[in-house]
Image 1 (tube, rainbow, N blue to C red):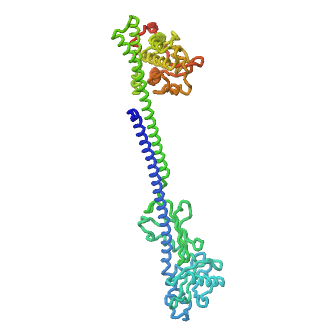
Image 2: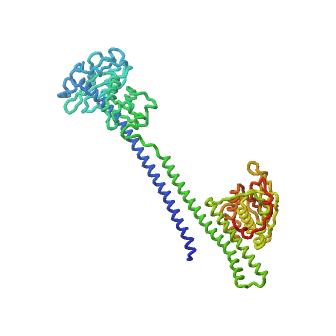
Image 3: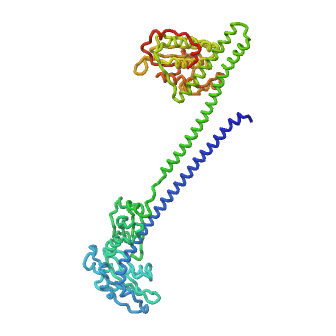
Length: 579
């Protein structure tokens, strides 16, 4: 394999590795983004589950606290009949009157929903589980209440009540009113149920007064979680018995509700259900913290940013390859441009040095060719210098009011030998009135570049026209008059889609990329740069009659030009190639 092949393949292999690394970076960023999203989602799910568990725990604690607050009172009220086991299942049972007066005041039905005085009194009863007989101490309730009480307590004692319980509560309705029953079972040996002793009261006796007191006890909920905040500032408690709400700590409003709800039902406590809802503003105050906000948008944004950076890196890599190719083409083009005139200079210099000329005419011809090729070299070097200065913003011009016709005639006279060597003719179309403030050397470089471009890409035998007109285009900026300099060839012309691209450095249209004519690719770029420094503009358009191409330079016109500046100048063969 040749060294040039190795040189070309090494950057390509490095680019492949870099592209692979960028793709790997993007894939890794995607994996990290997914892992971060998954971790955030897991964290959020854990926090939400912990908050719901906290709500369930709070509901259980409230029910337990309420049960404990009435436990002593109910147990004390029933203990005269249930605390001692019967000696046998057939033992005579004490009457329900043994309970009369034993119930504490908080258990008494003093709520407004109790109705009459008789309804507000505690009704003590004994239900013989052996034969189903029901006995009351004091006023007996209506028959409907008696039937409901007998059926309810019998069924509850058979299916729900446990031997290790000291009492049970049952809520229901009979006789058109809500009822609450607190009862305990008297057992015989071997836990044989004998009778149920209890009393009737109102459900409200186990509702608002009890749970309001429980809500005030901050110790029911761990201080390590709440930070010592009052319960009613953290949550809303609602208590229901069989779907009927008997207590609510705060109204149900959007400001007091959140998705974090816990619900617990306690059968031993009459099947009461406590529903705890955490307040939205209290979620972040709990020690476990609020659920983290979704970071999906941030993660997606970072992933998109990473993808964008990878795309930018790939575009930069592509641009670097393109610049490397353009640089190689530039070096190749400049080398070719330098090699041809240097070869001509060397050939005819050796001819003169070895005295191989046969006449004075051949001697002058050799000298003219050396001067001509020297000018071509100088023109190429000037282009490279102007381009390098433009890249660093160092180009400067010193415009002076100048008559343009003599200057263009001077440039044409200088360039005719070069055009003739390429088999082209050069004519001028000059407006003697045209004048503009220009840097003579810079404008000379502009015109030489445009003429060289026209000769290089035009057909053999063509005639290139260099012209200038004044007052064209309807005036420049702010209505100031302008002058237009133009170079027109008879070549194939330039496609309208390429008429702007050709002014970029190193750009050649697709038609000319494989043409025999070479070039450095910076001539037109230098033209536009120098014209812009004069406050003008340059563009390409179609030639006259739809044939060829015309390159136009528009400059602000001078208002006054002295007669000395209008006088034609004799061409300076050395200065014609300088910038």
